Every structure is written in C-alpha cells, then in structure tokens.
Amino acid sequence: MVGAAAGVVLAGGGTLAGFQVLEVDTDEAPKLPSHLKGVAPGAHAFFVALDLPESASGDSGKELRHVLKYVNAVRSSGTDLWIGLGASLFHQGGVPPQQLTAMPVFAGDVLDPSHAQGDLLLQCAGRDAEGVRAAVERLLSDLSAWRVRWRIEGFRDENRAEGGRGLARNPFHFTEGFGNPDDVRGLTDRALVRADQGEPEWAVGGSYQVVRIIQLATELWEKDSVPEQERIIGRHRDGRWLDGTPNGEQPNFAADPRGKVTPLDSHVRLAAPDRRNPPPMVRRGYSYDRGDGDTGLIFSCFQRDLAKGFVAVQKRLEGEAMAKYVLTIGGGYFFVPPPGSAWVDALFPS
Ligand code: HEM
Image (cartoon, rainbow, N blue to C red; front, side, top):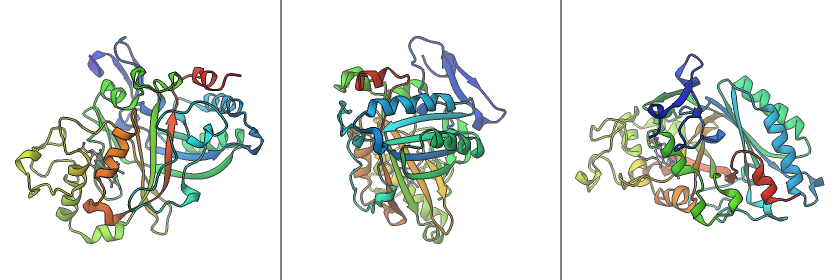
C-alpha cells in the first residue's frame, strides 16, 4: 500500500503548494529522491547547465565530489536541489548509463547550442523565487571554476496539489499534471532505474531527465477560440476530458475512433493513446517568461527508460495539431544519480 493511507507524511507550509513528501514509513514504498519529492513541486525553479572546469584535467570524480559537497551544504528546508549528469561528462572515463547521449534534434527542433546540453545540470526548486535564486547564486559562487553554459528560471502558476498530483497552469492557460501518477509507487515505478534493467550498478535508483526549452507562440494561440484550443490539447482547460469524463478518470477513446470528440492529432491522444498503459514518464514542467514575448515551457520529465518514456512520446507527437505553436530551442538529456554519494565512488574510484 502506498500514498497517504500507507503513511506518507505530509507537511504543509500553510498552502497546498507548500506540501512536500518528507518520509515514507513502510518498507514497501521507497523514499522519494529530491527530484520526485512532493506532489506539488516548488512553484519556482532554476536550471543551470555547467561545463567541467578547464582545470579538471580528466578528474571528473574529484570535481563531482566538490559539487556534491556544496549542493549538500546549500540544501535547505525550503529548496530541493539535485544534479543531472550529461553524456559529455563521461568523455574522460566512467561507465555512463546505457541510454545517455546528447539530446538529438527531433522533427521541428531548432536547437541553439548556447541553450543545449552541458556536462552537468544543476536544478533547484522551491516555494519562493528569492530562496531559489539565493541558493543558486551561492552554489555558482562555490563552483566558480565550472563554466555556465545556459541558465533559465521557471515558475508554476497556480501550483497546487489535487488528488495526489501536482498541478499548474501553463502559458496556454491549460492545467498540466493530470497524466502523472497520483502515488509514490507510481512515481518511482515510472521514474527510477531498477536493478533488472541492465544499467550499470551505480545508476540503479537514478533517473533519466529530459529538459526541453520550448518557446510558445502565445499571440498566435490567443487568436484561436477556447474550444479550438481545447481540441488541439484534447482536454478542457481545467483538465476535464472532451467526452465529459472527469479529469481524474479515463476517457473512452475507443468510442471515438475517428476523433470527432477528441481529435486524433490532439496532444493527449497522441501522447497517451493506450489508456491502460500510460507513457512511463513523470512530467514536472515550469513556465518561463524572459520578456519581449519570449515565453514558453521548460518541459522536464523523469523516466527509468529513455526510449520507452520521453523518446516514444516525442516521436508520436510529430505532426500534432499543437506543433505550429511550439518551437524547441534547447535543453538536454541528463542522468540524475541516486541519492547519496556512493555512486560517485563507484563511478570514479578515488
Ligand atoms: C509543447 C509544449 C507542451 C504543452 C503546452 C503541453 C501541454 C499538455 C497538457 C495541457 C496536457 C494535459 C494535462 C496533463 O495530463 O498534464 C499534457 C499532457 C501530456 N503531455 Fe504535454 N505539453 C507539451 C509538451 C509535451 C512534450 C514535449 C511531451 C513529451 C514528449 C509531452 C507529453 C505529455 C504526456 C505524456 C501527457 C499525458 C497524457 C495523458 O496521460 O493523458 N508534452 N500536455
């Protein structure tokens, strides 16, 4: 048994958005690592991609131990911090996770190298923007030898927990998060690498993280009526299905084979056509707004199998009705190592 009934201890900061999973008191349900913590993740986040210091001279292990030391020192009750390893970090040694490469260019992507990949991704999420910024600034000064490749700040409007899921409103005015699992077991099953996957032992309990910086053509989007927008997404703005099914239940796509109610090229229909086998990924996106109309999504997702998770869904989304409103300009593939530091010693023995 999992979830609140099985003893997931929730602590609130007075608002729903402040809830965080602190502890799980059954042997059955594993503890959630930082990147999956909390049904409603922090409403603010910072993503910073770094490249190894010039001085690293092949000793990635030493540099990573430094990073972990500072990350642990900066972690506080109001912020969650974690790192992701880029494929290029392994160029000088170490056995990488099997599926870790640089993020390829998918149909329609126009990747700007100054916004893509990086040896390491630092991510900080928390309740207030100031706390998150302060944590990141402190870390960057501690890690000043690393070179910042790109950085982007995100936020989640109307960040909240509902029915065991974290929800937020994206710049297209749609509520996101319903497709995620509503319990601890569901999250870990989809996101954490298992021992039987043939991955290197150090990687068990870690996750593949995909980040996509997606510009949204909000002006073009606003020209469409709300019903048109809802047919492009395949849900109402509040998450209800177009066939009237409540947001927490499964729609009946089989009764609508031609897509008269929920178009076949709608986002959700392509992303998750088989309602009994949802895509094995956990999505935790943020909005961004850099002024001058540069708004969009920092799409972020975690999975234990990159090919079955993100890649399969991304390929199915080619040609979706939403394609003309979105442009992916950056991001990358990373691997979030398991909690603790044993993995560094296994990967790069000192
Ligand atoms: C381009 C910007 C995107 C927007 C505006 C967007 C928006 C949405 C919305 C509103 C939903 C319905 C609510 C929910 O279940 O969360 C949704 C669902 C989903 N999206 Fe996206 N999304 C975007 C990109 C992506 C990408 C890049 C992927 C993966 C490659 C993806 C995968 C999914 C999946 C798997 C679902 C759940 C479908 C389900 O289980 O019903 N989305 N998205």
